[in-house]
Length: 321
Image (cartoon, rainbow, N blue to C red; front, side, top):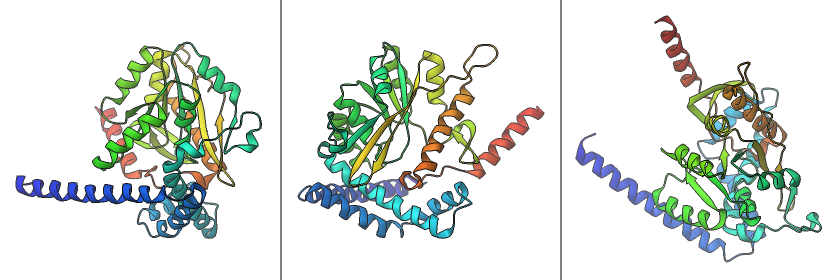
């Protein structure tokens, strides 16, 4: 790209991102003027209607057909509508996270948030040394770091910042305030997490996105690629891996579920089988998705057959040498 064309492109991109950021944060400011439940309901219903017109919904529909070939067209469309409702609620709830995180420890049915597997949470918290907790883009995944911070669990979470630089800066500042320590998922992120674990710290990782340089796995019945970071951390630090998720319940409530740590798969030579562990992690996520398909983020390019084909071709060429 010629320098003058590149500079013009960057100028217009920055201007667009600035305007979008202004609109986004202006919308949030207006939203805060209304009661939480009413505002969250309004945004969820608007997202359900507008989201179905979003071009990427076509990708989500195709993903659902690949994952659930047995479901009818009507069932697929219902999941899509409810997915957008969930995403609308996630977006609106971001404004009210400090209000909706409400746990009644005497009677959990009276609060907005209930905990399942509290014994695993206590074990995770009490560990003297490094540990890893993983989750997926299901329910309202932003609730999990809020819960950790509320219970004084010092956990460093890996997250993907918005592409919009003006949004990213403000969102990171807000998340750092409400959600403890955060590491943006970019070059050097794995080293940052390793440094935390070197000091005996605990980290949290989202694991349900495609990763072209990872392990080949099966996810929801189809071959794809998954990030090996979690498994490599487990191998390096010989630490437990805890699954955790947020489930959206009726009437604006949530259930945080912390499961028992995964069983570590070992090879005959005694070394950790990182490929199998990566598969086990994604099997856990697949179980969650099958249970509540409308609560998962189907907008990701989770299966990329063109990338898989190129990888297979590359491996075949290497084997011939």
